[in-house]
Length: 294
Image (cartoon, rainbow, N blue to C red):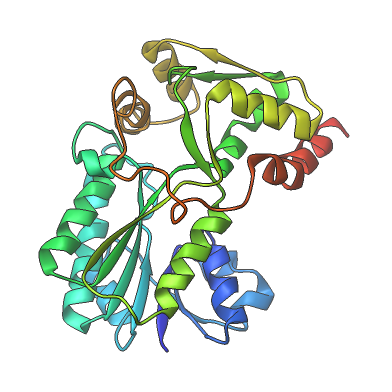
């Protein structure tokens, strides 16, 4: 079985690669910088240097593969949705030109809204384009990644996480490793076809204060959440060096999914995955925070 994996050093992609290797599959990894691959992984995979927004290069890199794990690469540009359109054109060209039998696309809860959810609108565009091909594709509608907290490590150290999401509205929180497990199951299975949507909700829906309490207990650091205004969040993101376009895209992910948004897929046995936020927080940010003290 020939399987191609994009973003192989990302939060999900690195787990996908490792799981495929353990399954006896040598994946073809599409990577912008092979030097970011761990040396032991690089020896075991077929690494191809590719810019995922270069459709011609992606078509060449995926020639002959049976299945594709596609993640739209992150954007730091002025208009992230334009970058998403370029990535979408690449995956559509590859699936169509190479007759790829199965594609697993890492999407997000909120993509079903199609418009008005900031950066998630870019994922919705990829979903729609793959659907228009009539391709065999599974869209993974993922919850809020635990690893997003690593981007706020300074705030965690300071003891206060600023958010613009309502503090009493629960979110589906999920470990990227669990997303990878669902993706690999689909990639290795040949017993499905057509368009599928698979939500990946993690073990529990949590409000921000509940999540902060869990992380605080796991790390031994006092932590609380403070809701701030949308404009205050925009100023924080700009001060971190984000472009105005990226600020709007990031803020839009929260503003578009609050106050009345209902996910298309309810939580079920099939959408619930096992890794808890407490276990992840103990394994990942706890050691990171310990190093900041030393």
